Amino acid sequence: MARIMDIRKCDREIRVNSRTVMDVQYNDEYFSMWVYKAGQERGLDLCPLSIQLDAEIAGRLVNYLNQFLKNKN
Image 1 (cartoon, rainbow, N blue to C red):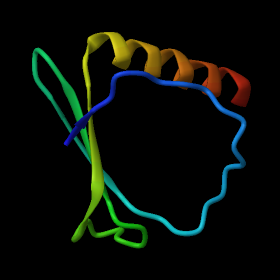
Image 2 (image 1 turned 90 degrees about the horizontal axis):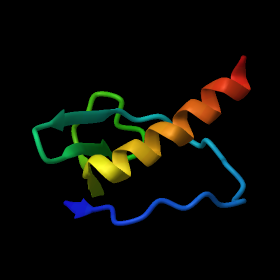
Image 3 (image 1 turned 90 degrees about the vertical axis):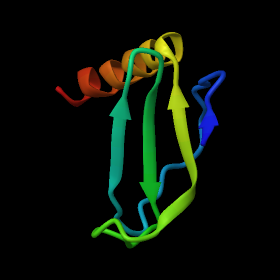
Image 4 (image 1 turned 60 degrees about the vertical axis):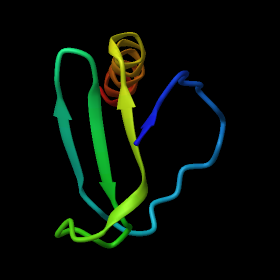
């Protein structure tokens, strides 16, 4: 489990090659996400990268998500 210390917006091309699922859980200190390997829609094999966000980083992620959703409308 890796704690994210910074979030940066980049200009990388976004590609979607397959689908998967993600599990989430949170407590008073962290919001955690476990991502399954590509093509694992049933959630059988975890990907090696799962992340934890503290409140500050989670707030920054919310801002990026809100910008993304705003651009969709």
